Image (cartoon, rainbow, N blue to C red; front, side, top):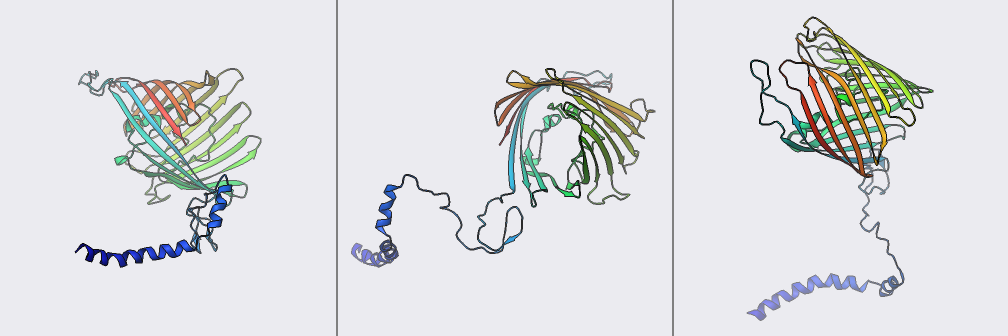
Length: 397
């Protein structure tokens, strides 16, 4: 029986070996021996696609091509950059209040929280003067939203914004979705602290930093440091109609060798009941003296039909002061203080006063560790103040 099985298998085995033997006869043994005299063998293109694929669409989208040069990768004008941030910190605050308005102890006080976020930035140019930019984010760091942390449902990747910038005459124009209307604004501030409240440099609302809806705008550089820009945002389902929340802003700026100033003005049109149009005017400036810390200041005032805490005042304002040291040992440092008002409802605002001090330590070209201490004081009766410490570790690659 074993002999019978062997006889059955033998023809099949010979059939498999036949093409291998045929190919072996075509190998030039002399050519193989020549490799012994070569120190390095180039294998860069060993896995390139040799198949003809006419009318291929390049990854960068430059258009159709008639040759087979497409190799399946990014086009020469497409770049991708990546970032990852890890957060760990603790806050001392109380979120439970009694009927007397006094904050009570909370078991969550002093608990340590941690989170991460991850970002991808894709950039493509079609003419060398334009730019298509796409931001993709993921993360679970909702606890650290104050510090520019991202959080998405299920830690999934989501598109965080799409914009296209291109020249028109002597101006620069952009259109986008889920993009700040102030994309082309120049805010005269050199402070770059971790928190959103103070990183806005006092220009929180006049700069249209909402980042939602469709947006478009333009900027013009007059030369000698003078620039101007405008931006508009609107609901994507009803752009610039009576049924949409719209916002428009304009910005003027001058930046010199070691100082700069800017003015921003915005108008917001709301459709919610009890909330009517609002306007914001912001002034910013910075000064970078030699041998001393850089100084950044900001002041913004608002006029709205929504009353402030007094229930009768329709105006509000907030301010900012920040100091930055570019060289403190191997890293850089900064301290800042400022206020920001958050809308509670149609009856008033909550004013928040915030302090922070941080130190940026670059471990290498792609990794930075930022320890931070901060405090928040709110004007609402019965709400406890918050103090916290945090360490943010950032990677860019």
